[in-house]
Image (cartoon, rainbow, N blue to C red):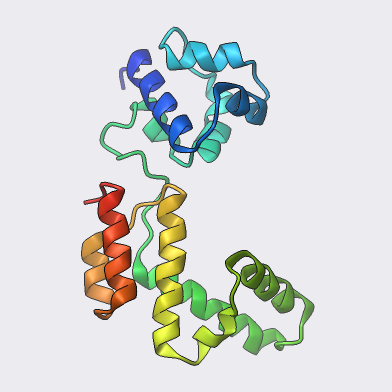
Length: 177
């Protein structure tokens, strides 16, 4: 792989701005100088290889995306499918079944999700419509965090409804094809 420092720099700058960070804020998160970030973005230098995993996490992308300057990978961290998300939500219910709904670990997970989402996720365990809405909510969060969600997968695995249409609209707004 030929590394193109200008392309890498432009990609880093784009991801930083997409995340609403200044060069100084990115530098602080990584423990480097803002001058280092500036040098990367201008293509004068590239980040040290030891820094790439942390940089990828902060910018919500993959190391491959950084090294390719975003080419080919679309700059996505990972590919998340509807079925994976549905299984993850179902796994939360299964934890409650296995440990008991009064178990500390289960309560911590549920309380954290409820607080973060300002909702009650347990309602999705018994209502298929609400389950689909939570699936969409979680997939939207994945997209916002740099994950790839295939619109064809959404159309195949979610029933037609407002939540699905909203997800497809957001996917289109993120230029995901």
